[in-house]
Length: 172
Length: 204
Image (cartoon, rainbow over all chains, first blue to last red; front, side, top):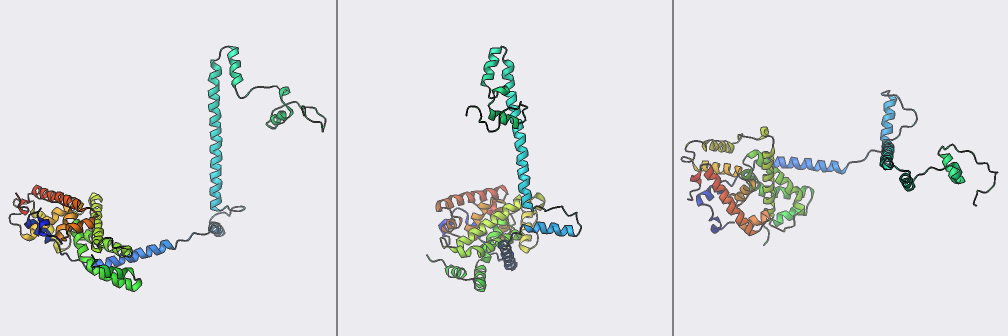
């Protein structure tokens, strides 16, 4: 407890008045309230420790039961579980974004190349710029048999190469 | 130094079920008035004091098992009570304006506080103030100054804790206790002067 020297900063009358504020008695209600709060906390802890996850088949069963009661038309074929639907939706979203992204990049490249060529006035400069390009125009005759096959696979209309069956390709 | 509450606290720590409840009830009986008193003086009204005291006692029940006697048990309980009371007062201040209680309601003590507050705005508020009114005015002052400052004054003067025990309760050094108390005295005097209550503080 305090010693007299420790009280020297405030006048004694003020200290006495402050001391007189002590000695309040807790109301009877406090015990009841504390016990009630403890019980609520204990119940909450019990509930949180007993949380269980519903099986994934629950969604299918609920939907089937609702369909059986005629709440909505039963879907044809198998109803995908919610988790699979989520995965498929995410994959579709990624695909759409990918396509949009590629288109955007393609347009960007196009706009990058055009001004360069447009600025070239003489044939020599244009030729020099074309030489630096990644793509170039070739005639069907310049393509190797493999390249012709690939080009045809991408839809290019090329004259068929007449070659007897079993003959090795040129250069092999 | 042996903690005077060690035996009772250990009875709580070494028991479960009914035995724990019995030991806890004894601890509760030992501290309920002190805890409520601190909460009442810091919050300034019985409703908030009851909320803060309840929070303190629930925390005590929940955490007594882990108390490691690194300080006196009483200091630990006071610390919880002070923090709960300060938090309650702050919540009250942060509450929407309509939710802030501007009048005291209910018990006899609050009626006295209300009367004392009304008197303080009269022409000669404390000239005829009784001792009881002076205390009510002091309580009003404690409620209006910074809650940390009022908590310090309550621990020191209302509960009569030594500097050493205040340091342990608030987990600050002895030097910090002294400097903070000096500032708390200045704050209280300034408040009383500002409110025209110099007669409560006769120091020139």
